[in-house]
Image 1 (cartoon, helix red, strand yellow):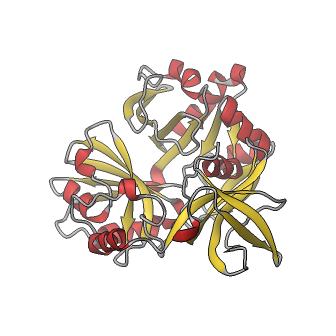
Image 2: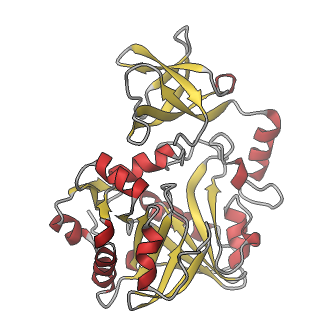
Image 3: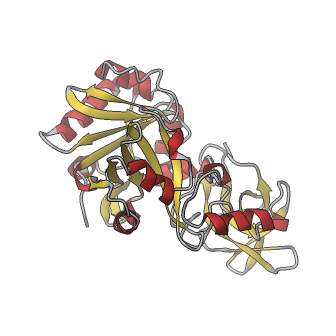
Length: 361
């Protein structure tokens, strides 16, 4: 297993550690519900240094990104980012990712999922027909996500960058806690507000920034947060998790990601996805709420009242905020309307659920 620059911090804090995407990661510290509440109500710090970062530079950088991603990166200006995905040749999803515009039309950073770094890098390299300059900086990049309604107020004294007024999907670059060339972005995946901090792992920067954040947030009760609460937080918002809700076999349109699929440009599998859009989807990703006692888990079958299989669960949990069981899953399109009753097969028993609007909370 790989370690992040913060692994010893987690262990010293008594975190429950486990393997995740090949990394030794903290799953929880004080407990998922308590950590979840800390982020929703105050602020929490996630170590997400396991994520991957690629730099794409040069006169052919934008051309490459446009061809391999579904969103329109030509709309980006310096200081802006966008959510996107890389479709495969069959219309499935290689990965979902963030695209940061570092220099207009000339330099970008792609942020990809930890478990897909090798696969994604190979995909980008294989499609680099015009020799854009590529750098995989994943191993030397630290990434902390400080999330919650108090996060930016806690962090503002540590920098001259105006992070209090950082708009969603924008970023700034400058000095943070005395460390140069720190990128601070507002692209969080919890729905609770806050920022992410990218910086190079050198000259003890990891320790300096971690310690500065916790010192600045001590009076506010800032807490370290594990991946368990990260999962419950993103699920309450209806955000997709690669490997659960989206993968190589699901299309962005089926996953409700039509808003990042721009047919005004050419990209991998555009024709397949356009045909899918025009002919109608056979399945859709929906949110649901359990109406009877039970928690839906990944890959549980979804059935109709007669017991016929109509889909499968992709994510499910007991929502700490709502105090009820929620989930997401793919169902046949005629069962995807809000208010439709569906049934989750849990230990050979059909447990009633209802399709509801996302986000849940």
